Image (cartoon, rainbow, N blue to C red; front, side, top):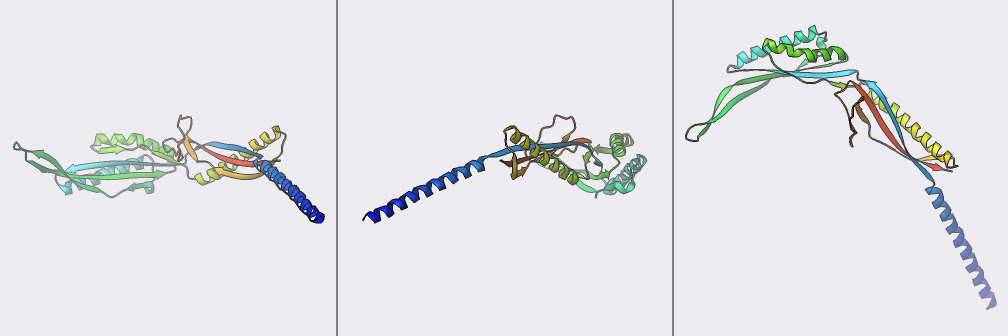
Length: 244
């Protein structure tokens, strides 16, 4: 009987020691896993657009479809020659298909009956330019309104500016933002008397492109400015590091 009680006491004692060991390791693991440094790295760069896209439209209206078509052809030639005179490469000039609409005027008589009257054919065409010669396209977009004095019904859009090496720029900024995050985390760990451990997690922020020196706000889905020739790209990286 005494022997049995002794065995039970020994087993109970070992159980208590084992439980204490497991519990101690659990707290140690919890402490280690919670000993992290969370930072946000940032990188930005100013750059110049190297590609411009611009478009304009012109139209003619006539009761006779053939007459309207002939007038539009003359307008097309005037626009083409003007752009070439501005130094734009003819291969960079694109004319879209002609749009033809039949237009009506809706009226009513004295008895309240409504009817419509055919007022003519309206023909319109778009012209667009895509070029790396930004200065020439900028100048042409400003000066093309001079053709209005020659009888063209013309509407010019503002140029849009792009960067052809955008993917390379993104990779460059991601690398810089990651290095910035690591440096910040290292500084925090050193100031706290610890050393920086391995990277635990990293999340890439939204790529933002805004106009230089513009008070343009970032967008939740990512800003993508096309109205400014001079732009600023910005990206963030959120990172978590272990600390020893």
